[in-house]
Amino acid sequence: MREQWRQSGINIAAMRALARGVLPRPVFDFADGGAEDERTLRHNERIFDNHALLPRPLNGAGTRDLSLDLFGRRLALPVLLGPTGLAGLFWPDAERAAARAAAAAGTAYCLSHGSVCTLEQLAATGAAPRWMQVFIYKDRGFTTELTARAQEAGYDALVLTIDNQLLGNRERDLRNGFTIPPRFGARDLAGMALRLPWLARMRRELPRITFGNYVRPGETADIGALAGRMAGLLDPAMRWQDVDALRRQWRGPLLLKGVLHPAEAAEAASRGIDGVIVSNHGGRQLDGAVSSLAALPGVLDAVAGRIPVLLDGGVRRGADVVMALALGARACLIGRPALWGVSVAGEAGVAHVLDIFRREIDRAMGLCGARGLADLGPDLLFRPSRGVS
Image 1 (spheres, rainbow, N blue to C red):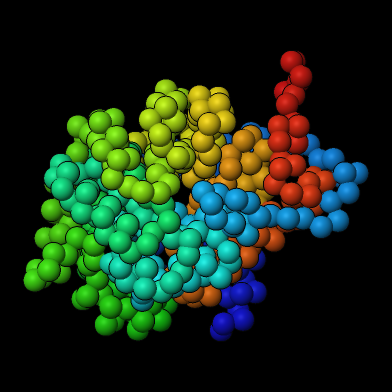
Image 2 (image 1 turned 180 degrees about the vertical axis):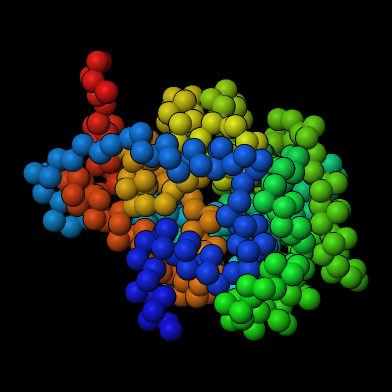
């Protein structure tokens, strides 16, 4: 069975199909779905079809180096694992499994604020580099508390997500009646025979699933109560002054995630932010928002090389990564592909997903004549002449 999934999971789309086959529909849709009509979700992937590579094979790329320096750490490949909430719903202890897989692959893992394990439990694995996601909450003291905990636990970078100030309208979850822990209706139970391995793995885990970072000492870990409290904590009135306060507190690289507007990117660079992540939350927040890749050139122009720009959203192929880097991104983050990997085979599944990206990036670079990431520039992108369609 183990070899069967490896043989079937030849690319990211195949891993998604395998995950769909092992997860109950409400659980799969929780990860796979987006907001409302899912236009932004679809556009994130389809926008790559509007770009084409222009190879230079005589450059002699007999060997390729996929490594890069990012915020003082050497990474083995330009693909990082972005934050995904409640990963522990897909596989027992999924966050720590994914972090270990990322460390083994030589790349960074960003822990979601909404992880099942606590940030301290993740840090205890020793997996590095490790980043921590935070928000600006109505209770600014809680933002300060999470940041201090991440500092004490030795996280390498802090990622302030700014596009989740109101919860997105995720209609797949509404149609499925999705709850945490999930409760299954008659339609779900009718097709559950194929999901028995997931049920067996998660039988003891489901009653204990909670938002680990939000449980106060001496407090029960009831996830329903925590979820209600979390929604009320988010603050749509956040302002740049809150970012400044976080910048003063955090000693280390600070990134803004969810940047799409060039003016916001320029402001971030001028206020001492160390990097921005061009992202629309995987199409899970504002449906109709610009795709990440389409927003990337404007953000790059705005920061003018002052800080690294990363991209998140719709990356499903190694060639997608090569295109994003040729446009000027420093690296890419993935979310759903890691969840599909962990759903299929835990830590081994995430390692497989990262290896798919590594092999595809290496192959695309070799076919383009690129020996290293520095060779991935605008000259490798085809730009049709006027009048050519």
